[in-house]
Amino acid sequence: MTVEELAGRFLAVEEELDMEEEEGGQHGGTRLLLTEEEWRARDRSGAGKKRGNFDIRKVRCYNCQVYGHYARDCTEPRKEQAHLAAANADDEPALL
Image (cartoon, rainbow, N blue to C red; front, top):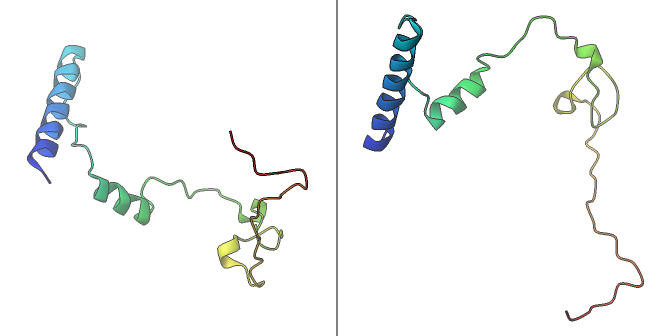
């Protein structure tokens, strides 16, 4: 972590504390900002995601178009799609 990042974190916390003092709040819920690496680790761990009542039966696979699983879990062979630009016969090279 660079000195600038550390100073920025401290300034952000001080501003938050000042705002809470003006509002009459307490300091129990304050925390420092996360670095990019911490955000990535948090995303990988699934922190903050709702996992309660999710119905996988409503999910459709992009590979086989069947409901109930994701394409990454599909047992069918992967369908390759070519992303080619369609050329018209009247398209001629032109100088602008």
